[in-house]
Length: 334
Image (cartoon, rainbow, N blue to C red; front, side, top):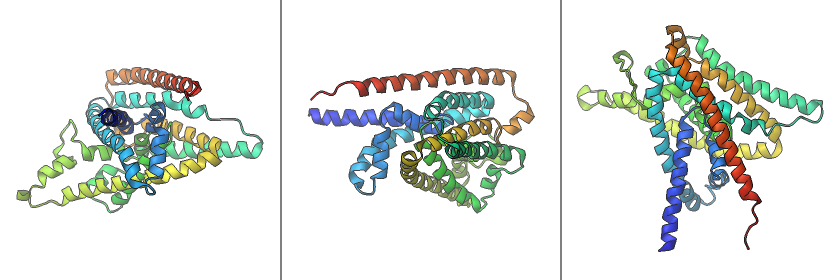
């Protein structure tokens, strides 16, 4: 009986951890990898994912509570983000940016000065390339008239490949402590198009109403058109397949990179984080809102929340690391 209670309690605890991971997955700037490290389940998740094919049943049941909690947490966060961004875009962006700044020390703590010109050059190159890619993508989407949302509405064929790529990049980024999967999707311009597909916006625009829920409503048998509904389902399935591929590949690649080129890898990670900060404030989703004019209260609240979320996540990570160090140094009972 006690053994059964322990199993149920462990399942609920892991599910609760999954909820926090799901929230961090949904919120750009929060790193699921960092949260997993803080909650001391990072190694468990990485080992289970990389060993899933060898011992499928055992690792599947280890991952199941985390997965269920993650889905619940992500969906709840998506609803709040979607509604909040429609009303106060700069406030939400500032909140996300604060999370990024607050978690930046996690990656910076891994940086070390290189021994010799060759090693220093590798570090600078990794940082520069990552910074240019992460920052440049957002700027390019903002300065061009290209819109992934319109491409989604028109069902351009390459959008299906983009869905797969977005899933791979978003899930892969979740594996790296200090990097946010949602932030990575925001950088490549896929975050809000995907969010709009899943969630109905607070503002209903009949001329541009293509969310999965509205598609389902408009594709009932009397309308005679179910094509958009199946397009939405296919898009989300490809996103999920990409996420699975990204998790498996990233787990193995990160294990290899951190083992053989740890410091250089973290220079690249810091470059990605700083570049993503640029892309968060200059991208195709928020740039048009600057041109329309933002509310004064939205700007002020955005800066305030950026500071508060930065300080909050910084001390949360610091407290978690100290707690982990204290636990690790305690003598084990024989």
